[in-house]
Length: 133
Image (cartoon, rainbow, N blue to C red; front, side, top):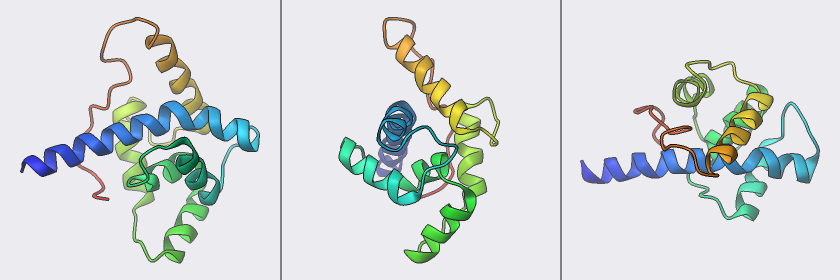
C-alpha cells in the first residue's frame, strides 16, 4: 500500500514537471505548435532530465491522439488517451479533458507566477487513480 502511495506521488510530480517545463522547451526547440510528435516530446523530456517513467502523460499533453496511438502501438504499449487526458483535465484544467497546448502553456505561466511567492496549492495535482504506468 505504501509503495502505491509513493508511486502515485511520483507520477503526480512527473506530470507537474511536464506541465511546468515542457511548454517552454518544446516551443524553444521546435517552434510554437498545436502538437509535437511523441519523439520530440520524449527527447525533450530526456534532455531536460525529467522523469521518463510517465512520459506517456507528456505525449498525451502535447501530441495528437493519432500520433499518440501510433507511437504506443509501435512500442507495443496499450495506453488510454482519453482516460489519461481526463485524469490530467480533472487535476489541472477544472475537469476539461479538451485542453489545448495553449491551455497547457498558460497553466505553466501561472505556475511560474505562483513560484514567485504566492500561496501553496495552486497548480497542485488533486486527482487520484488513473493510468498505472
